[in-house]
Length: 198
Image (cartoon, rainbow, N blue to C red; front, side):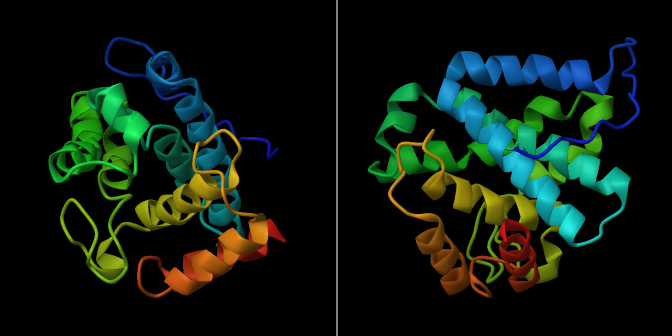
């Protein structure tokens, strides 16, 4: 398990630190779904390792870490019945599910300390080829933090035993990432992640 970085505390307008705000939001995720809570931490760990491998500045690594912890905060708005059926959902249910990216960013829009995290959360399901959601952004128009979260989120969904889709070995999951490199995912991010995995 990677050791997570701890940046200097940033205070919100009411004197609460951004870390305590995020801890409270993570507690809501844990109440919603313990597996989702563990997934959030795994994605954050992987995202930190990729960002460090890409030699990003310490402050940016911390922003990516915090955004990765909250990337699925919008799942709080998705009924458990839909989450339990994923990926075997109706078109209407998939529409509700896809809205979690926007819903999560809306939850944070009035929290001053979280403003820089919002684009990474809103766009973590965009695709390198422009076929993602919610805005169909393409290539470098997708914020780098969101591109990193997209890769590690996809990997963790298939490799981590805390998820119900645990059907792939590490090698199978890496091959899948490589097969989607340049289409769903930023090739540089995929390469950095595979290098970080060792």
